[in-house]
Length: 408
Image 1 (spheres, helix red, strand yellow):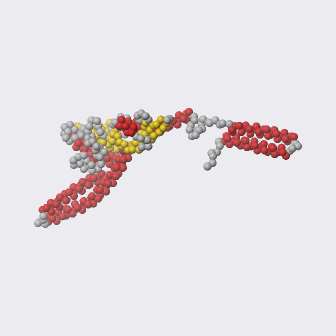
Image 2 (image 1 turned 90 degrees about the horizontal axis):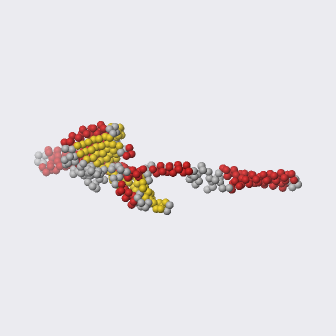
Image 3 (image 1 turned 135 degrees about the horizontal axis):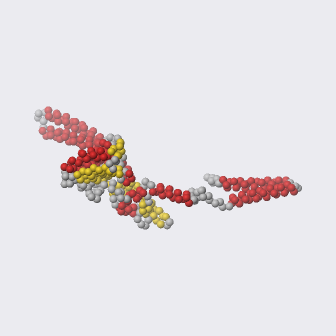
């Protein structure tokens, strides 16, 4: 590879030295051809002296150390104070607004480096900031691990990465916390949709002929006057169970075959009014109360109005079932703006809440904490909310009870 070309001033100086050398060589040749002409020799001597002065000045300038211009970078770094300050501010802005939470950790506690890190520890996010700091302290350089922490929006999972650094002779760690809860939920939902679709398809293919043949066999047995009653009872049981399984599988098919949401602006105040009309009388009849609050009353949301209403109805129904045995059941459904300009809808009750250790499973299809539950309601809610671009979490409350948070 060739060397970089010299700057333009240096090239000009080198050209002057070369011209002076050529003039000296030419004058020496002319003088050699006129040994007997003093005038010619004098002229050649004068011209040679001028060439020497001109070329010498150029040579001195070429060999003298060149000052670095303030507006030119040295080794790619700005040398002007204002340029340095602008570069530093730009770097600080990039770190401050990075979409990943960054910390630095030395001998003491981990220190947040940007807004994303401060938001994790701020009120309204991590329920126990000290638990997050403990995770950061335990991270080792070069390590990547999946971690989780409880927040007011529910349990959140993230990837924690750590890099070991030595700065000014001191050991430090750079830590990055990257939330991936939404991505994991999306992958899980897609996997469950595919599984449920395959299972329901195969089961329906087998159940349909069983149900049809059992009804046909029942009709044939009924035509025989001396038919065995045990056979008739067996066929009736097969037909009844087959019909129940068809209905059962059809309910699960709704989880994997939801219609695409039709998004439009939805006023939450009228929607909450319809929910109040549907639910308030039942809660009052049981000696309780149900409140529906929108703050401010003008809140709007881009969503499918039918799917959003169905999701909230399912959550309200679950709250009614969870508080069925209480003397004074309470339901609070609220919609408000939260940090970051996002809209959150909370459905909270004063029931027993989700049993400890089952929080991560309640949205899984086929899983239910109820004795006779089908495990479809919450799975359907999560599918509908995700389809509208939102998330749904189960959040623990200090006062107890269950709280589901829909965030858009």
